[in-house]
Length: 227
Image (cartoon, rainbow, N blue to C red; front, top):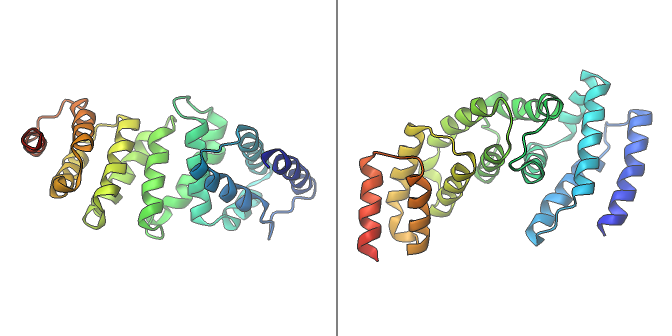
């Protein structure tokens, strides 16, 4: 299936670049969404992703107007799906400057233009995980922005949502103590919801940050009593 899609995509890509056809061209959003949905079945086509990335870079090289049309063509959810694909392909490998400047920063700046107010909770969590896993020069700035946004929304998070945030922190290793304390306080409220293994996992992840917080000590005490 992916083999046929790659060939179809290459033909569409050539036509898009030759004729500069972006308006109402749904090839890119469809491919992004298809690849994102395939992740549920543990399928990731590196070839298809790289061709998609090349196309977006080519559009970026055309002119600002062409990339602006691409941003209008892609829904915020499409951008987040693509960033998640980036996080899989670039996990633990620092992306090059051109990809960061032409794709990553422009996509992120577009999403953060209104502090992600237009994004739903699920999209914000996926975005945070994606930023956490991608290595790039300006990562700290976007992590801090996400921390500010998420801290104000923890009250609406489920215990599963909070566990996803812990996973992202484990990927980024970004130590923001006020954010971590707020996260721990909300996890503590749901402590009875987590299994013993999950609690031990949470503690081990936070232990690596060398924390000296009363709320963290309370969580450790609760976990020890639960054993």
